[in-house]
Image (cartoon, rainbow over all chains, first blue to last red; front, side):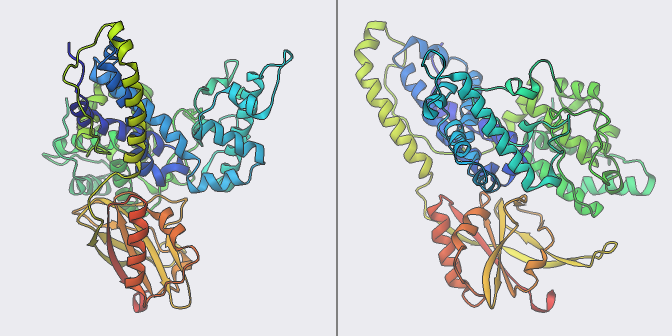
Length: 198
Length: 341
């Protein structure tokens, strides 16, 4: 089976990614005014990565396999676009206002996690967090990131309290106020671990 | 399986359903309304803009405002109270049952009966809940519909790639020899892509004309009558409003925390009621762009002092700012307030 033609595939599937990113962002009230712009920009940015695969597919069997199925490639474009959209979300005006109220360390961590999309260990390195062996403490890096995220969500909720469930309510879920940063799942937030579920 | 043959808002069908509900307390799907309604439901469930347009129409019909509920994933339980007076504003406010939601997600919209469909059209809570579930689950039955909707969208950017004549995979040895070329291409693509993402068009910036007029919402309860704007545009987009004052700096409306005003060709879009701060404005410039531009306009006008008699300078200023921010066109209209307020 021949690999996909990029131009045909892009024409067929980029609209899907655009819609799905827009729909996903629309569920966050603080982002709703920006969803079309962010979706367009994020799909455009993701096109760069997906083009690399198409280029490599012409020379590599591994990448050719990656692009055999147009739907799969469409799903990858959507996921890549969502990651790109996360880079933009901190800039939404209500989020920016809330972020500015945080302590400087939290502001920096949020930039690293959303804009730069650094990992736990990277954050530990940036903050100089070391474990007992003197290595970068990824666990502490993750905890610092979660603390910064929770502080941001609190600041967003305080900005418009009537728009959200009180954060002390057992039904409150911060991941519905603002999207989580990459490489962490909702289950890894302290209040949702150990089987506390929706 | 439902196909989206058109995605025009079937306002007349919705009005007929709402009218039957008002008269008989039972919403009735008009004759020949099912096909259009299924198409529109498909559009709403795969495109938030369509859902939002429908909900804005329900707000207008029932003189109420709708606050989007928390998504279902927000530890939602059946007895969680809805917003305060939802049941007083809209005829229906219960979400569909979990079993029915699962059926619709798995089998698509065609399994809805006419009665269910008519009732669903008048229930913004159930519509948003269904949208939420479909967005979370991405069920196959709906992804086909989403694909049909997505294909109607223009590609977000035009991407130009040079093709190599031999498109079949090569041997590992050949690949190793080609690595320097691949790395060079990578660098070129990343650089080129960054350029494309910030320069999405080459066409000149277009300035168009829109239409707008003031309307007055009748008094409700203790609330006085409030002015709004009715906006028409030949292009789909989003409206921002710049209020101009004789002795004060311009103000941009709606605020950044509010939904943008979606505008579609063929039917007027209503702005939210003017906030009290706009009551001293003598002119309002309506600015329609392909993407929401409230933040860009607000930032651009920060520190400026455009007054109502500097309209042409203001338009030239905004044209430059919007073009610099990768907007491709703008449509303007003015509202002269004066006695109409």
